[in-house]
Image (cartoon, rainbow, N blue to C red; front, side):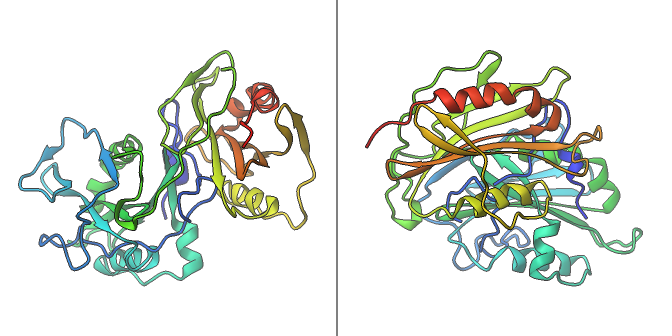
Length: 346
């Protein structure tokens, strides 16, 4: 089972976060069938002829890029026996469970049930999207069968697969460099219209007026963010802050708070949240959550501070995620940001 703590360390924020384009939940998607297992990319229903997203990455210098590679996509050789592939498929395909169980079958493992998929998934936050990472090792450590570290990144109209196949000892040796590779993936829309293969227009993100808190560094977020910051902790930890407005039905306050609780592996609430904070734009529902188990390499807990408000045909989410110490020491700044931010009138 994938170790969640392996993604949390100083200077490398990889939170358990985030449905179509919703950052506020851990999303379990239906995604395209796995093309990365076959050299004959693409299979039927393969890459979309009209991509909506530009995906970029930075591979470690010791990885050897192989040609020819799928386009768009890449292949890398890691050491003498490791193979990493990056591929894109259009649409949503056969689902996370089907793809994960295909990988498990390749290494001789039994399939997982739907509930087990959620437990095994390790989400890495990339802007406002979540790349789901899964791990499958053969039961016999001495088996010649390669193990798999696989990432699935669902986006509107297309799905990306990142697959690292190698003997178990090679996977473990290069585990952190692969995770760091995934963490540095950058997603950008190719145009102001994120229609892509889906052919849908996406509303421009409403402008938010705010004052940047001291010590918060503006960060590059996705096109969905109205504000985005990287927060450095006093002891080397990090937190990510995002403001994202969503049009339409985004669920009840209880459902959204419970999504955040699930991301920290906390039991769901059964009653509606009651804590609120009064701000320049109205009354926000607010919550501060801390995990009950360590989710960092150094044994620290993870935390989420979140606030939400429905206004001007949008539900606005203000969310800070990181190690518990960094989040807690920035809680007053978080609440001050929520109080003073001005959401535009319709």
